[in-house]
Length: 145
Image (tube, rainbow, N blue to C red):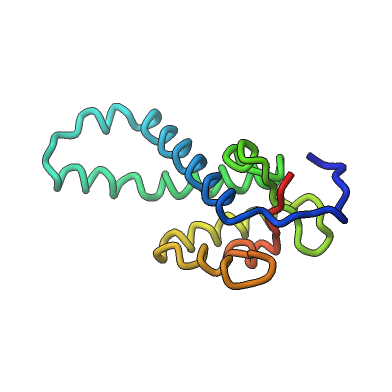
């Protein structure tokens, strides 16, 4: 993905970003279901039991999301969802590869956005760089490949 001409950068559309989000969340959900299948399969239909089991998955799911987004954005410049829809994350200042620390800040900001009704995602509709809260925190831009 590196080696592209930075003068021809095109910001990724919110539609592409939303599709990448859905793909990534599906993959993470699938991973969680596979990892915790024994616990999930043992659950009865009682709503209170299902809720209790879902609550015990909150921290592992948040950890998996944090690691997934931090690693893929740092190492590949994109998560699997972003790779599929042909967009990538770049550093806001030098338009190159995102550092590990920036990708970790971005990942943490993304989780915070999700926890507060996805409001941080809406920020991307109201600024020139289409930067969401997590893009601002990580000092990143999302561009077409």
